[in-house]
Length: 325
Ligand code: PEP
Ligand code: MG
Image 1 (cartoon, helix red, strand yellow):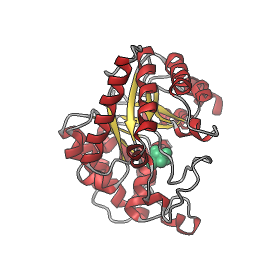
Image 2 (cartoon, helix red, strand yellow; image 1 turned 90 degrees about the horizontal axis):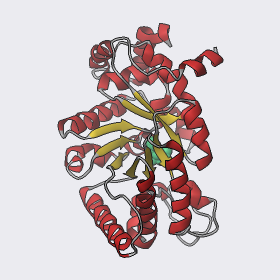
Image 3 (cartoon, protein in one colour; image 1 turned 180 degrees about the vertical axis):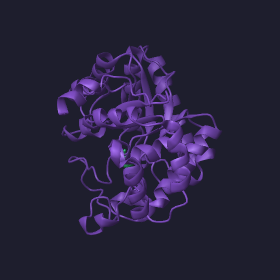
Image 4 (cartoon, helix red, strand yellow; image 1 turned 135 degrees about the vertical axis):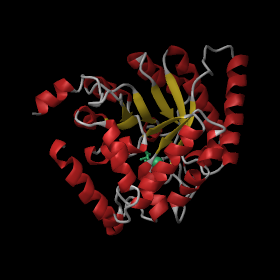
């Protein structure tokens, strides 16, 4: 069964009624490109770039980052590679960055907040990404955006990076899609305003669950509350998809929720057409796509959206789709 799954994962991810899904991979290391290809991902929807920083004993140089990024882009071209800028602190700490202990790291100087406080580190990474972008298909993704001001500041930094690259006469491509992670509840609420400033959204359910339900994603004591079928989460996903569609920007999901076949009818019903996940999950999701009718998931989700309990939603999913899982 495993073998046929792997073989069939190269079949197009198209529903019975002809709706195409784009299944992308989440990666952390250059070496994972092999698994992206083996599992027939349509590209990288989330490159968690912090791991290249964690491995070193200091901040990497622009040249070091560029070489690695270029390698990934060249290996996968023409498939897109989505570079998410540095998302450190929170749950991922750089061993060489002592002296910034925080009482609540998840609510602290994490991700884009850190990058905007240390623009020299941010610019270095953005320059490396824009240079790699000259060698294939890339996208730029900013984590932990919570308000419009942050994205405006990010764009100023990108502008500075472009100026520097021009001055240095380096080969680069600034014409790449700019997106933000939607993983903080405030970003869900102002999604339409944020959409004015970016080309795409990527929903990060891992943090969206943590921040909206006040559940530390690493705390086992409250893990029983961490549920992707929580109606609050499902309704938030709907808000974000609707905002993106209304504002005519691309929408994708790269949180773990996207890699569980049980969630697929809900995500498709809400209108998502691109999902990014651990590449090992792709064959199973692909198979599930091929067994679904997109039009039915629409009607199904209309009922789900009115349900008030995660356990009821889960039972309803299993009752409706258990036979094709
Ligand atoms: C998320 O928060 O859902 C996400 C994809 O990013 P990370 O797990 O790296 O925080
Ligand atoms: Mg996150």
